[in-house]
Image (cartoon, rainbow over all chains, first blue to last red; front, side, top):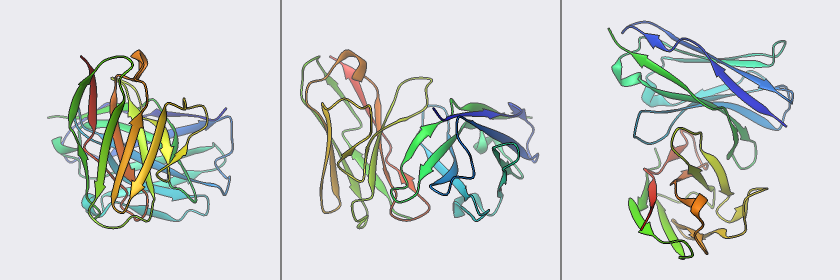
Length: 120
Length: 107
């Protein structure tokens, strides 16, 4: 079955760029039936949708992140990635990648999540 | 953005109880409402999509319903493995938004 796994640095300093990769196994990231999505959750808090990418490379992201987000796709590696620029302590959270089914836009498969801490 | 609220924020219940959680959207989401269960240290798990469709593999004691901008998740008979936090999410319009969560605890 399809599985997702996040990877990337767990500790950043303020103003640096957060870079995470989600590796998809058990299925092709090129399937036209899905968007590939990033979601985050600060400790003890709720979930925030960061953005998503379609197999065509088309993206959308959350305006609350003030254009700091870049999401990209690498079909040769079956991966998609998140870059979040100019991080602050407010970006400290668990970051999840997830599969978003087109048509319902429900997140049916999730990675385990990776903790990212921003601290000087 | 579409704002999502949930009530209650937490509840205590016993095994076998019927539990109801409510989610309200700040505007119409045309039934594009999903429910997730999250246990500590784990990723959320999709339970219900488009208000009332049961995700494959989810026990039938979970059900969802809708009335306008109000949505309900019902657990017909609470089981020990159901103690968790439940989130709703609207998928009608980006940015997709989640409710703040309802924590179901053991009485």
